Length: 312
Picture 1 (spheres, one colour):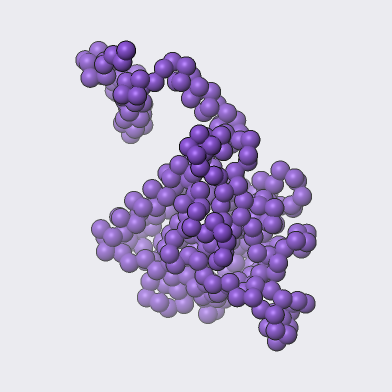
Picture 2 (cartoon, one colour):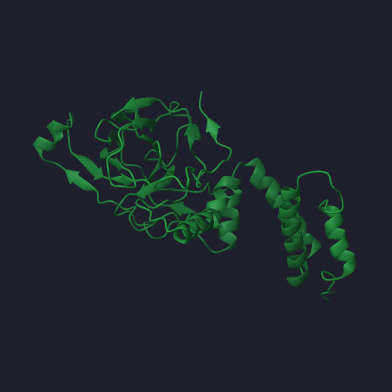
């Protein structure tokens, strides 16, 4: 039997009491959000006839999710990160803002404090011997199309095992491997040498993959490279490019693939290109220009404050 209690005065008054709406203490915005979420859960329990066993299984799952530090991984997997981007896109459209380079999700693996280089940086330390050399470069431009000297390009990606430094369970990577901050040169150009990253999947025995299995979904991502780009007078851009040709290019469990963020990968095998880049053998080359958008009434309305790791 599925009894109906949610719309009763008793339950509605109880929700207000549980969420602090009957007093003047606390934070009104927190109360508003918690009241909505708790009300929605109460309604779901009633509409779906969720049993006590199912409810407490959910509580146990949340405990496992937190102890595994995977909430930031499950969030994009359930589409929350993409939905927040969709809302920012819609806000820009309503404001008449035309974006140059598309935004896309940050992901949970940024680390603040990466070494700063000017114009050019070597991201990898050479320890990943399976890596194929990558040269990536481009120009950062402003809303008017002019180059932005001094723009800050933060870049990070994983190794060929799919692991990021600071989060590598093997312990093989040194701090800030494949992470740098590059200050664009006088022509607004950035350039770096690294290796072509590989795609990766959620920990197979972790709670994120556990839930995805229940949904009949995989937990894999195509190879990609993350960016934060900032410059005076412009909004911060959070984006990432995918490596063209990856089989999961259009099947990313985190829903981060967007048109305009899949630049071509050119394989360079000619001696002239190899020597011009100071290399000893063939390499992959990606050119990716970045265009920022201007501040809105002097403010950056797309700065996202969230907990992030700060590297030593």
